[in-house]
Image (tube, rainbow, N blue to C red; front, side, top):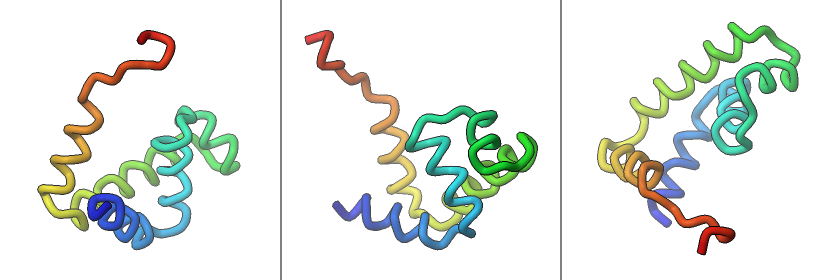
Length: 83
């Protein structure tokens, strides 16, 4: 729960355009090209926004939180159709 609160607070601190791009890419699973189309900006703009969003999050979040996020992302998961 604390991890979620820390990440949400850091996300809230991002400029709106960076936050939207990162959510579409990281949470919704759209490609850079799809995010660019959705947001009606160039691909280069999306790459820049996501890069700067990630850079800002790395600066805002404690190292322990970043480590926990990376650990969660690299743990193997069992899909429902595989069990």
